[in-house]
Image (cartoon, rainbow, N blue to C red; front, side, top):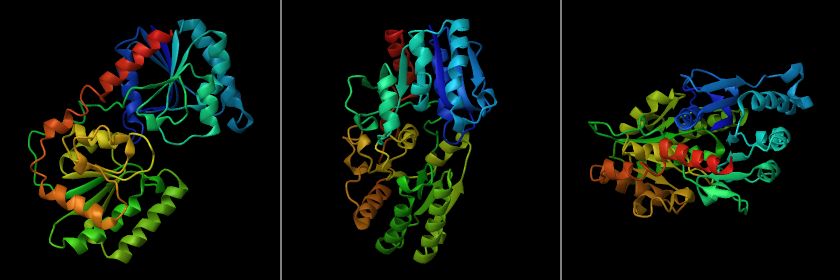
Amino acid sequence: MKILVVNYEMNEDSNVLAWQASVVRELANHCEQVIVLTERLGRFSCPPNVKIHLIPRRPWGIPKMLGSLWLMNFTVFDLIRKHGINACFIHMAMEWTYRLFPVLKLHQVPILLWYAHGTVTNRLRLAHACATKIVTSTPEGFRLESNKKIIIGQGVDIDLFNIPSYLPERNDILYVGRVSPRKRVLLLVKLMSTLRMMAPDLPIRLRILGPTLSLQDQIYLDEIQLEIERLGVSDCVEFLGDMPPQKIPACYRSTFLHINVSQTGSMDKTVMEALACGCPVLTSNKAFFNLLLEHPDFLLQSEVLTEIAQKVISIYERRKEYDPGILRNLIVGHHDINSYANKVYKILQGLG
């Protein structure tokens, strides 16, 4: 089978989208050929049956604001004619579903869209109308009522995110992800102040790992730093900034708890990465409530800081009782990159 993959970025060193490269590599293990159309290209060890085409910043020399991205239909026309593409997988970059719909429809190439976010916009409705099928992580990851929706879980690189042979003494809480209002990092800073009042002798600190990606994010980061100073918790809150994906697993392995209080409405991959490393988690994200049904101590259903703090203290006191292998088994075979790519491929086969 020959497929076209359209995504945002092909870069194994990307701090946010490295998994897009991993998905392509895994799909290449199933397909005769994978043609990739991407907006950004970085370091990628390209398998022999993968061909990458970079979307120009100004297609045909015309600014994007004048609609030049729609001209990529001509590029895809040539790719279909040259390679005999059987199906198209649009990974996250939903706008390309309707931008490339004319040429894909003309050649009867079915479109499979991956979308996993709680937000519903008019652009998503248009993408939904153009897609043949939509795959998502959970019911919360795609909130339009549709008979096109297929739930397949997430895809974590379990070779990269694995259990260490030795677990050191762990006193850190770790947050991993974009520093943005939707991720509610400010709440975690306030949590540290509450923890200090409730359990002043516990040597717990918060480490924040992740980038700011917009001006709004930077303003939010400034607000967080002011709150840290106001609350007097600068000695127990550390910003790690951006970090290459290859170094992130070591952070999960050196912490007793990964905390996630985002309101994205979809399965944040960081929670699954932590579990794959055998690290306990604490999340308010409803998308995880079924997965963690047998671990109610990992679920947050309260916004009250003292109640969240009590959960943290309880997990800290029991940190050596959690079996890393049991936590990892929640991911392996269910939400790992291998099973994810296999599910996507089988659906593409059914469409092609």
